[in-house]
Length: 266
Image (tube, rainbow, N blue to C red; front, top):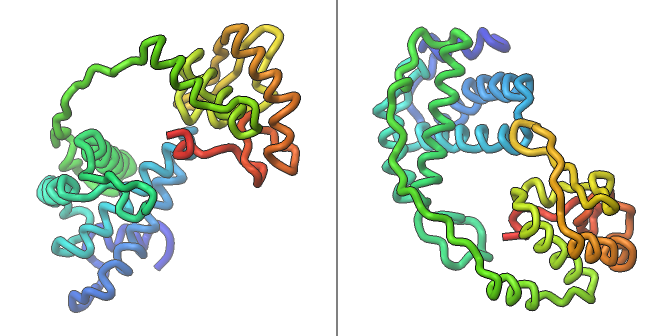
């Protein structure tokens, strides 16, 4: 069986699984569900979703199905629904953040916002299954999102901003890079993912403008002030060439010619 036929067989429970075995459950899911997730990835690409968004959806869904295959009774996808999602939510609420990252010492549990994001991703996948005809009804269409507390975003005052900038040695290549990154961030309010992806060709230092591509691949032009332009010019002309051996297209490169990661900014 190949392609969509293979997936359909599993969806409607016609695939012979044989005796439930802890060692082959994940393999069964990764085979049939893996093909469905590949179709879903292609659908998201065709809809022009960003690579970051696509990876976010797929990573959450893979985690969801691995959980089902190891913790819950194995069922065809047509029999999965609210009960399984509720069990998964309870699991997430007890899950540690960043379990495999040794650099983060204060871990704690997943935030309510992260848990809600997982539920959004699962609901979106089930909507796609219904729209594509893999299932006759969507059992999660009315499933409520877990509630999260609305927080007031705390902003920095001028003294805090000055103290933050004074902590950076802008006379070294690395320091200058992060000093300019902070200036741009404070000056423009860009998202971190937008900031680290800026290319030299996106900058207009004469007019003080930067072109960015945001969510949904939407392009916009954002202005920045004279002091930021001045620091960027010094960084680009004198200190940035010392960061990477190759000529990177990115404003904030690393040694291997790529741009710095979102995580390195945090």
